[in-house]
Image (cartoon, rainbow, N blue to C red; front, side, top):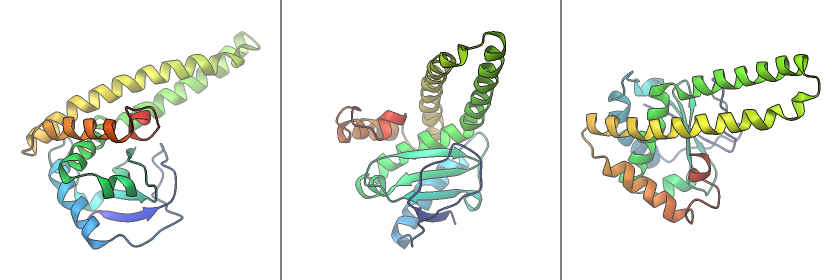
Amino acid sequence: ALLLTIAGCTVSSGPSSPSAPDIRQVAPAQAQRLYRIMTPLLKAMDNPKNPQQVYIGIMDDPGINAANAGGAQFYVTRGLLQKASDQQLRGIMAHEIAHEDLGHVAKLQTLGLGLNLGVILLEELLPGSSAVTPIAGGLIARGYSRGEENSADRHAVDILNRAGYSKTDLINGLEWVERESGGGTGGGFLSTH
């Protein structure tokens, strides 16, 4: 079974071990729902995951969001679980599983390390430049992130197809998120994806 907890914590981008300071019991129906939706997707990955090796943290947040923290760790909000249909949840989780399958968290960690080293070296060569380099680094990382999001969308379609589902699960899930979030201007899933 998927390891499920409810956590009132923020999602870490690092591969640290799962921790949940505000752990509460997960309703059996929600645990079964996530297992039923995610298992076929996990098995359809290029690098399939055993559901017993997957950690899912449920954040006590009414907003609609989900994340992949790398290392087969996924986070969903209480709001997503309460408001999404199975099809919408499947589409959104296919996107997050695609990030895992493509190794995006590891790539972002490597990029972050490279940007930090670049700031240190540039400061040595041009004293005072560290005031500007975080801005440039942020712009580079955001561009990289957009490419990763597009790649995850394409790969999510592949995963859905291999699992016997349609790309419309992803499309409907993303359109639903956009409607629920007021067109992506109020934070939530679209502000991080």
